[in-house]
Amino acid sequence: MAKINPIQAEKFLKGVNYPASKKDLVDCAKKNKADENVCDVLERLPEQNYNKPSDVSKAIGAINREER
Image (tube, rainbow, N blue to C red):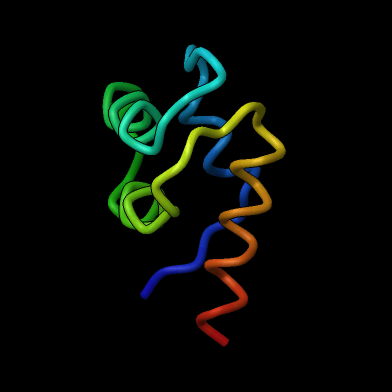
């Protein structure tokens, strides 16, 4: 499975309105032409609302740590 830098993901989340659901994040990334690795990681985020970009970054960091 792919690991991504949270900052890499944030580039593709421009325009998302927070709080945002996982679906909102994935849809926004796809709309912004995120690559397959970014979409894969976003699709593995926990089902919850994310109140700000740093919440998304923390969740991505947790996914990256799980893959060590």
